[in-house]
Image (tube, rainbow, N blue to C red):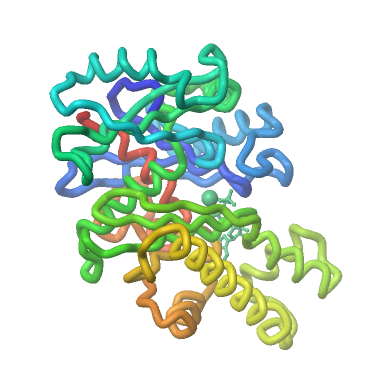
Length: 353
Ligand SMILES: Nc1ncnc2c1ncn2[C@@H]1O[C@H](COP(=O)(O)OP(=O)(O)OP(=O)(O)O)[C@@H](O)[C@H]1O
Ligand SMILES: [Mg+2]
């Protein structure tokens, strides 16, 4: 969003559990995954989606870029959705982009509750307003400088230049657009809740006709599952993670830990959907798209579908993409839902606006 410049851009998702880097090539007709890597982060390096330890994060980015084999020098990162302020304002539809920009800089103090020298400002023309065909809806996005600068510094430490600083929610919207275009069961007019079950946070984003209607974070994620395993069976965090992945767990794991966790995921989704419906005039969504590490839990999608009665799919953005020779296609298919945000960021290489 904030700093535009186009060439091949590496998407860098700095999240709680890992740094994920992704480079896409090909064309909008058929994207190709050119490079990818996932580099775990130690606990505490990123908390509440904020970089707490820039050195650890910079090192992890450097390792990820190396492991991916990418030689891209430009990168797109995102600031957390909850850290930006957005306001959608009407503008006469005959304004040029330059005129809109000038007007926004003048008007921004009315909308943004921070001194202008403390924020980065950007805007996106969302299209003709529903309520008045003579006006355009323009969304102003403001992020505090420190949120942008700490990400630029982490990338610089890894030899990359942050040419685009996006917002998590827009990255999700972008990746969703590409996935939905090719998805056999999703139509543009469908109202879809993208549910990102991460390590620390679960985010629900409702999208329809390419536009985000609603987004909500909850402090809940897979870390809870790992912690429960650790506490119940007396394992360290690392041991618990290894045991969960290998499936090497006592017989009562399913009934005492996994099923209650699935039930918690369901409760979180229902809760966020209730917030969405009460904040809008919509009564429900047409389908759910599960992404993030939590979505990879075997059987979770079926459990959610059965208990919500809403068609539920896994969000794998790589399904319709090809893979460069150095990229292992099997790994790519398994980890697709983990790379959803990174994919939205990497797609910035193809922006023409
Ligand atoms: N194959 C898998 N099956 C189940 N869980 C997995 C799998 N792979 C990773 N996870 C879990 O998913 C979590 C990581 O998911 P993800 O990468 O989406 O989180 P994140 O983006 O780092 O976190 P957040 O979005 O909260 O900042 C970890 O807790 C990890 O244990
Ligand atoms: Mg995440």
